[in-house]
Length: 308
Image 1: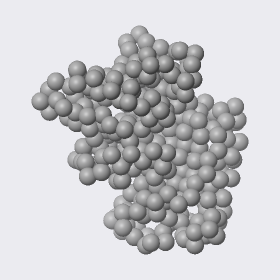
Image 2: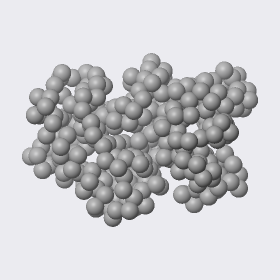
Image 3: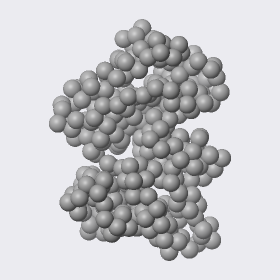
């Protein structure tokens, strides 16, 4: 991801709790950011309007505060999505069903007179790119990146390539079934990991916010995640999972110990025995660094394809 020292990516992260926008260098330095709560009671266009305000402000800061230029825009959005975030339908943002996010961002960016390329992907896939670039999976060519927060998402990297799938939604580990006949998920199925271990699910199941967990809640959440990760390891012949998100990192060692115990129990084949599940390293920078990585990856591919 080499290039001019003053070039910046405009990074946009769409989550079920908040939406954030930031400025990220080609080296992965997050030099500016701001966020707004995801108001789920707003209508679709009104919700985007609140995002557009901080997009415009960050674009202004790129020039006035940092003396730099934005050369690419990257979006990481909760899903499902259509490839490149042409439309997004986040399970936890009910107002957005097939919302044309890509076009909406293009229009806001164009207000500045700049015609910038805009690239989009799932937020958890963006997270995997970030952790592979600068975090706990650096120099690893095969791993799964995973976010356990308001929702649960993932991205799978094999032979150094992030898997996309036909629709761009590959890696949706939050909808691996971990509890047959379990709780109803927002997607409509029962027993999805997201319905058992996300922050939203924990509060619905236990009546306690995920910021006030008991030991038993932290342990159960870790075991649920461990089951999904073990299945992913065995399916894709992987040995590393990097896990971030407010729930996983907030629950800390109790969560990771419980998850690792399950991985050790369930990964008995030669090619997965000894697999590890570890905390993300980028902390709260990860989502925006990941969104920027989507933008830098798109720009690099464009250059390789010879597109001006």
